[in-house]
Each structure stands twice: as structure tokens, then as C-alpha cells.
Length: 340
Ligand code: DAH
Image 1 (cartoon, protein in one colour):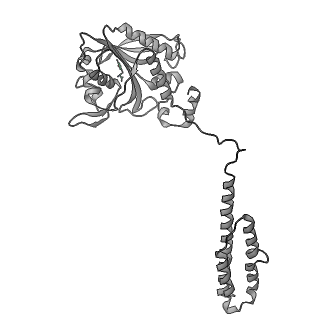
Image 2 (cartoon, helix red, strand yellow):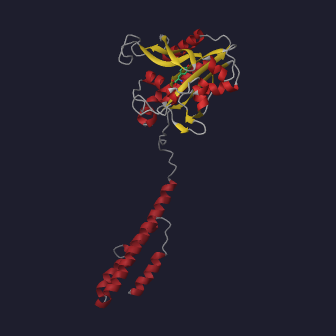
Image 3 (spheres, helix red, strand yellow):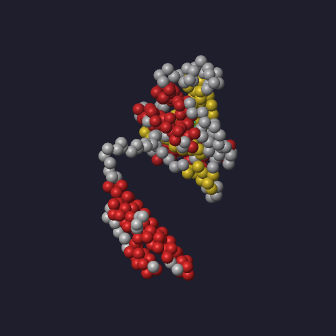
């Protein structure tokens, strides 16, 4: 009997099949009711007691071998079979998931295209900056609090201050250093500040900076460009107001409010009942800044402005938690599908 088992083991190990029907034939031949292995098992009764243990083990091994072999043959053929059907032209096309533009990209694009229509070109600069471009050239005194570790992420302090830019005003300097007026640019980009992350503050956000330098540029020019921007961004009935403010790099400086785009100026929760919401800082470029960048303030004058893209996006889309912009929750991102 052991001889028979060994012969069947060799035979089964070498089995091949060309189709699923062949596999079924083999199953019947070895494992079916009258199959070779089934018959062997029936014969087991006649094995002398002293050999039962050895023969029993051998039959079991043979049965396992045959079952596994047949299953393997069946799976291989079934796989090949389904490959034949891989191109099923009657099936609906697999749905494709398209990404969407990020809301900040949408808003940035809209802002830039409004300024482009008024003749501004785009300029960009590095996020890793030095003290000169972010602070000194922009007339920040040596002891200005914005240089403090509280606000600025320093990468190294010695021998020179290398830091993550805290505003895109640094791009003004980079462009003025290399170009003589007329200069008319908008500078979009990411900026960093050492702030605790909350619904209202983040350690990075985005700004668009504007700069116009030429002969005889006046505050009235600045006001007109900003009014035009506000109307195109928030609707033709939008009004603006300028309040005196302070920035080291502009003189005079102002902050600009727009009439609240939710209540239309009547007063609501968003504008805290005032009818106005602040959107940007601006002013006439300080002569010290022009001088620092190699532009003669006796010949040229200019204006600058800077605003946060998140701020504009919040007003346009009522996103009240800044963190949503950087969490990449697709449910949030898909809310902007229609704006794409
Ligand atoms: N750099 C300022 C900030 O980050 C924004 C700003 C204000 C930019 C006035 C300007 C400007 O160009 O004239 O808060």
C-alpha cells in the first residue's frame, strides 16, 4: 500500500490541467466517491495494526497534497479566465475622482487677475530670507518688536540673521534692488509667524503684496486702485474707507476697511455692528526704503499695500476657522468644487 501511495504522490505532484473542466475530472479521479484516494482510505481497514500509524499518516499527506494541488490548478485557471474578461466594454466607466483647486488658490488667482487687469505683473521671492530683506531695508528699527523671537522664526542668528519671512513685503526689496522704476508688481506667497495655532491665527498664512513706483505716484492713485480691487472682489456696491495707521515702510500709512459684505454696511456679527471690516494695510513707500533699494526718492514715489489671502477668503466664503485651510479635509475642499 505504501508503494501505491508513493506512486500516487508522484503522479499528483506532476498534474497539469488546461481548463477548469480538466481540473474537475482530476478531482473526481482522485478525490471523488470512487476516486483513487477515496478507495485507498476504504482499504485502510485491511492494513495490519502495526502499520496503521505509518500508512494512516501517508494517506493523510496524500489527501492534503491532492486537495491543495487541485485548488491551486483551479485558482490559476480561474485567474487566467477572469483576465480574458478584463476588458468588458459593457461596463460603466470606472468613476474618476478629480481633485479640486484649493480655496486659497482660487482666491489668490482671482486677486491676481484683478491686479493683472490693472497692469500689475507677478513677482515672487524666497520664503527663507535674511534680516535685510524682511526688516532692515524696510525701515524697521533695530529694536522693533517684530524682530523678536515671539513673532519671527529664526533659522540662524550668527553670523547673519536667516529667518522665515514674516511678510511678502520682502519681495518689494528684492525687486527694487534689481529694477529701476516704473515698477508695478503684486507678490503672492506664504509667510510665517510664531503664533499659537487657533481658529484665528496660524503659524503660516498667505499674503499678496502690491507695489507701484513711478514718477508722480500719489495717495489718490493708491486709493483708486484699492477701490477698484474691492469692487471687483466683493461686488460693485462695495465701499472702502482708509484709516490712518503705522507701518515702518510707508509714510503716511493706512488700513483699509470695506463695507461689510454680509450686511451691506448695516451692522452684523461679522463686522461687530460697525458696518466695516478691515482687509489690508497700505501707504506711500517711505523715502528711506526707496533709498535703501537704490531708487532716488527725489525723482520717484510709490505706494505699497499688503493683504492676507486667508482674510479675503474668509470674507468671501465665510470660513470662520483658519485651520480648515491647512487640514486638507476633502469634505471642506469639495465645498469649493463649483468655484473651480
Ligand atoms: N507687511 C504688512 C503685514 O504683514 C502688510 C502691509 C502693510 C504691506 C502696509 C504693505 C503696506 O505694503 O504698505 O502686516
